[in-house]
Length: 292
Ligand code: NAP
Image (cartoon, rainbow, N blue to C red; front, top):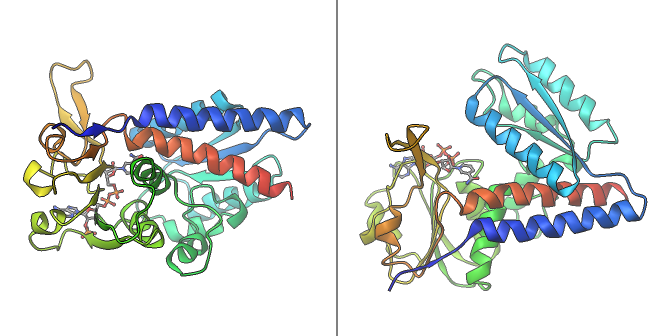
């Protein structure tokens, strides 16, 4: 039997509507509109398109967005000064520094300058540190990992004792997803490029999260029957039949895996829309926290 396909676009739409309704309520109470500042350094086309998408989504729910674009030649102090200026700006509730930064720039140093109260991307070292520690609460949870957990929660509200396997250990997806799964009491295995015999590990997973960046890597026989499979990957593959000459696929061979898994997310239309929805949610939260 074919897997249930989790419609990330519809789920994200619902979250955006909820955020929109809350923003409206704030306005009715005479509160200022929440504000998000986006900082884009360099001319990476994918990053430009992500930032455009985030600003458009803000506009749709009534969040004000302030875009800052610096050339790839901008110096580390210039970028950090901008972040410090935004920290001090009361109209800005959230600051998003679009990653990756141009090579040679010290990403950790830039991210550590973002005020923890405005760290809506959740990548400040203190937020990540709290995520990794028992009994500590991060102020903000990174958006894509938060979206992954939201999707899993839709089909498996209780992860206690569940075997979860995360493919990938990046700072922005794999590792925070693994930490969140541990916090939800799953038993977690983290796989990466040095893991031996991946299929034998992934076949143990009740929940499998793929965040690798390799088109169609996870095959049907890598998956335990009935598993929940969350595909974070976004990969371009050449496709002459498409106007742009390519199409987007995930890290999971969708057509094969959907015949084995119990639940699966599509690409596009799975995790991607949740990432932006969670950013809006975090920005709203930042605005509410700043009001106390
Ligand atoms: P990344 O920083 O390149 O990390 C990839 C991870 O996969 C690394 O931990 C790497 O292992 C591991 N890996 C690479 N090749 C492998 C292999 N053959 N077998 C097992 N593990 C392997 O990528 P990322 O930023 O986490 O992104 C992962 C994917 O998610 C990409 O396709 C990206 O476009 C997508 N993404 C989507 C969203 C969204 O909103 N949906 C957001 C962010 C990213 P090592 O650590 O050993 O190198």
